[in-house]
Structure formats: structure tokens, C-alpha cells
Image (tube, rainbow, N blue to C red; front, side, top):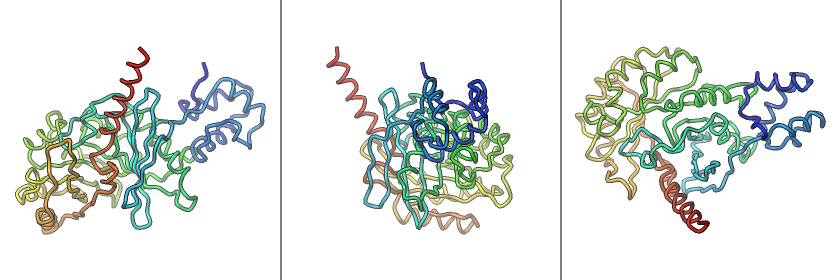
Length: 357
């Protein structure tokens, strides 16, 4: 059985080259072909000898999760659909905005956090993505962009909770930031979490230099526990202590994400309580109007409640911006990923299995 070359660390790649009787400096060339040029065929590695390419091909292969669909919405936002070996799909979203490109990538197939306002959570948890599957989303999207537009901001905010897939997520980030990997500056990478506090304390030790976004979504313990079951395990008090303890680099701030749901968490009282909670924490707040869909019984906040909420935060000297969701018409907006496609694939796979039987 051949081994997937992308599952090897750089050091492991050097070791197998030495065992083959080859110079270990070839590991640098191979890594750049895999991650910066995105090749999936040893024959494409033209600065490596044919004899080494044959040796690699005899024992190894280069994985690539197939891209099965790209949908572009009216606002220019694109959803990329990738198929995993078991037949289910993950989704990534490319968002153009004022000359910048942001790619929102997935870390899990499904999600176990159970947030009531998120369609992905309705899938339940199916499995964690491997580090190379997380990075493959970036590699394949970059390959399809014009050369002058290949600088991306990466946001780990797609399907799944990144810190629930801790080790593979950290490995993927290290691969993204390595000069021998995707060579992306840590300043262009943001990890978004629902607030897994134990993992946040572990993350302190990693010294990754990336940006951190935290979903609060309710400033009251009981309401947040209802909306986000993670709060029953890690309370707001515990989460905010973790943020105060987190060693942020100079001039860096947390991004606090707050999805405004009409009649649920968008009251002036909620805004004032949020101000009290965030006192002393270096942060900026992204207010995100809820994206309605036919599967969940929530509604979008009104423009009046959104403006009122934002003004209360600003009056308390907090930086608060409104993040308008993109890609609603193609099911690519915040909280919409995965579920519809998952139900479709379930039906297709069940139908195929029934026909085969």
C-alpha cells in the first residue's frame, strides 16, 4: 500500500529521503511543490531527478480532495465544495472585499457544539479533518486564482469547531505558516472558536502568532447556555477569564463575534451587559445580523435594533463594526454551511446503496 506523502512531517520526509540514499535537501523542493505549487503528480516536480521521482512514486502518492462544485453568488462570494473519501462534502467560502480576499475554511465534517442558530450543527459530528485536508482547501482555491490575487486572509470559521480538532488544526496552521509549507503570514490567519476554554489555555503555549476570534452571542449565562451548549461546560465567566489570561502580542486584539438574532439577544439590556463583560479585554466586536433559513425558527434583527445595539457599544468606548454576511443566495453565509449538501448526499448515498443491494 502506498503512503500519502502529505501525511509526513518535513522531518519524516527528510528521513525517508535519507533511507532512499538521496540528499535530504530534496525535502525542501518537494515541500514547495506540494504546498506552494499545489501539484498532485510526481511527474510535475521538474527540478527533481527522474530516478527520485520514480522512487517516490513506487511507495507514495499525493492526496488531493476533489473539488466537485464552485458556486458564485450575486455579491461575488464563491462557495467551494470538496468531496471527502467517505462521500460527504465540506465547504469553503471565498469572500472578496475592497481589494482583499478572505477564505473561510472548514476543520470538521459536521460539528458537535450544537449551537441552535447554526445549520452545520444540525449535521452532528461526523469526523475531524486531517491537517492536509484542512490545508488542501487553501491550496486548491489558490491554484484557481489569478497570480496577482493569491494573497489570502485565512479564517478557520467554516464547518466545525477548530479547537475541537485541536491537534490537526494546530498542525495545519503550522503547515500554513511554514516557509516550506504554504508560507502564509500568521497575521493573515484567524482562528474562530465557540469558547473551548481548556483548549484556549493549551493554545497559549503554541505561540502561533495568529489572530483569535471568539463567539459570545449572548451576554447572560442562561441565554448563552440555551443558544450555545458549550456554555454549560465553559461558562462566560470562565471564558472571559481565559481571554484576560491570554498573552496577546502588542497591539493585537481579540475579535468578539456576536450574532444578532431578532427578539433573542438584540436588546439594549443585552448590549449594556456585553459592555460590562468586555471591560478591560482588548477587543473589537463584529456584530453579525442573523442569516435566516427555512430550517431554523429564528429571525434576523431589525436595522433599528442593530443600530441601537452598536451605538450602545460605541458609547461605552468599544470598537463595534457590523459584518454584513455574504453569499446568502448560495448558502455560503455565516451559519449556513454544510447542512443542505449533507442531506442531499445522504439521500444520494442511501439510494445508491439500495440499488446495489
